[in-house]
Amino acid sequence: MPKAEAYCSEGIGLCGKQNECEQRCHASHGPGSQGSCDYTINPPLCTCYYDCPEPPPPPKMCNGGGGLCTITCKDQCCSDRCATKFNQGRGYCDNSAGPWLCQCQYPC
Image 1 (cartoon, rainbow, N blue to C red):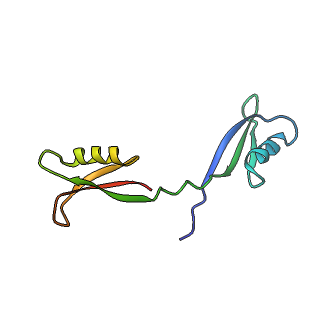
Image 2 (cartoon, one colour; image 1 turned 120 degrees about the vertical axis):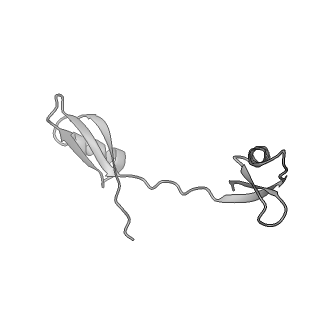
Image 3 (cartoon, one colour; image 1 turned 30 degrees about the horizontal axis):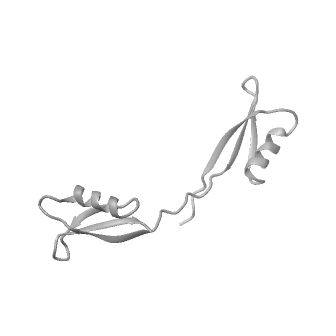
């Protein structure tokens, strides 16, 4: 499947003389960018159009144990345990493997 092109824009001030808009745009966002002056407004303003940067990949998630879940310690309690035990940890109760376990997930 082809990647969809995404374009970003940034206002970079007054247009200036000659091709200052284009030059400032290239200086900020590289030679693939394009500066455009809007002369329909006074004073004319420069907008820079450029390819949006790729978003960072989501962090890899690791799994850990948070003990047993009980009638008095369900999902919220489990998640609180995981948050205490692991940086940015979250948890849920799971009984698919037999015992009711507190499963933690956190960024590796």
